[in-house]
Length: 192
Image (tube, rainbow, N blue to C red; front, side, top):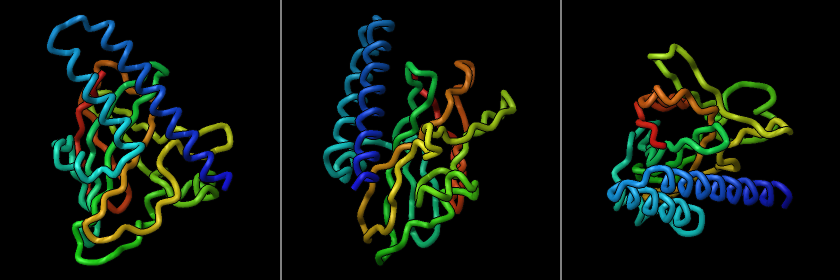
């Protein structure tokens, strides 16, 4: 029960941080065309946390689609810099296979601290090839990765919303490569 509360609290923190960051971006932009983009991103973030993401997957074109085993896909829908100096990557797992499958445990990586906290996306990294830096998933004070946790199985045709938080690369880094164990790599464009 406490693990569920922690996950719920973490999702609320991410949603609040994204809302503040988007509001700050909207105030700072001042352009008439840019105001519409943050509003749609904010509503997409709210929908992701409270409603099934099947409709969202149909209306949004993913920034990247990373292919896993047996028809498991990781579709990245946004990569947003937040006011706190971190980058939140949002997306969804999608099962394009013919049957139910288990989310691979390898996604959490092999670091001892992350292994203690169960299945997560803790093994993901971002690579800024221009800046020649690799960024690892952020952790809270107890060592838990700031990602979606508790991933178990996914039914055929089902989608599961996910997020991953990293330290934000410098503003000059707009294109980075997302690497997730057992999946192909994908280049994503950072906004904000």
